[in-house]
Length: 480
Image 1 (cartoon, helix red, strand yellow):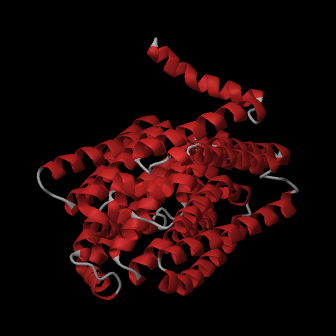
Image 2 (cartoon, helix red, strand yellow):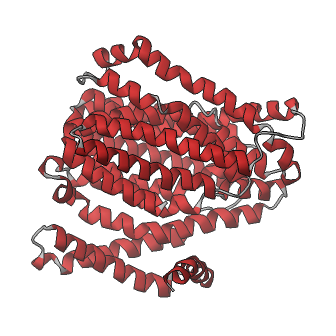
Image 3 (cartoon, rainbow, N blue to C red):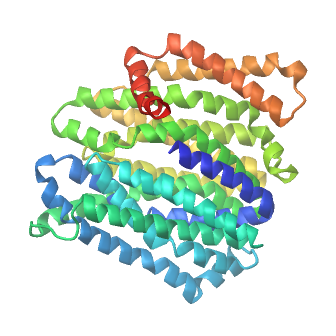
């Protein structure tokens, strides 16, 4: 996943420099539409299968035999949006909503990837449900970014610009899907199943998967509402600048996302066995460790994120308040995001759906009020306010229902330490700062070193140090 983030970050820099802020904004609007659709078409099975497979280990073989049916239904549904765009909807969107030249064709080619992205999501949920996320991670975070940057680089050499990015993005989904589908056919024995279809069991999944799916849809639309509204009310250049900040801020959630790959089925299993304290430990430890690893990246983006123009060029100058709000939103999302498993994996998924549905309505209201008046700042403020409100309400609900504390004082302490060390580095280097890329990298490196030294002694527990050591062992062996 680190590889994917680094490759995507480098590719994003290359894309922004080659095609500029205007075309970069148009592509990101189309990509936001793809992302919004790709959370609807799996019908919640990317999360529901984690619960379905993770909570009944004794029925694992028979339930894996149901996977082909789930994939067929969702793949068929995902074909519909690109067909609609090809038959006239794309022209309507270009003329009425996003008035960018040739946007209908860009959107169509982008949405061709939707059926394949949908099946990747469903298979990813199944792999996480059997506590073996590695094949899904390899397809999503190794094959896909590698194919994308390779094809895009070749097309750039041939003289293509925007279309190089669009075609490479679509092709990367298709090829990574082919790899994952072949692996799944072997790993999960999808070609033949000795068990007859248990339609009652299948129906049981579809009873709660729509609610879980709605939660995923609402969460994704909340995350993309700022960009989509900004694309309508502002210029594509504004969207490109905002998307560049989002690209940098996504690095904050890298390690937190990696830590939570099998958290859902483990929470489901703990609750199924009436081990509420074990569920609390899982969620609290995940939040604490996520903060330990994500806080220094958040602090670095907070202090030096406005210097993105040093890498992408002068057309990507963004206000500090926009950077601060976006970085804070991503950081809070990283810390609190997996707390939703306390509801969606324990049978209380309807409450999570209602919470996120209300959050989406609040987000739409805030975006419609703030973005037309304040542009990028309004988009950042609307998304930040919405996320804070959702996290506070969810935390209160979980605390009241289960009497568990998911996020403790250690998260606040860790965040304060990261911001303090970055602030010290910024102030100490201020007299020598000429706002160049080398000095910026030096300041960030100093802040990371200060944080690592203090956090290792003050905040890391013995089990954290052991986990890091065990993580490094394969790399040390490889080096030898």
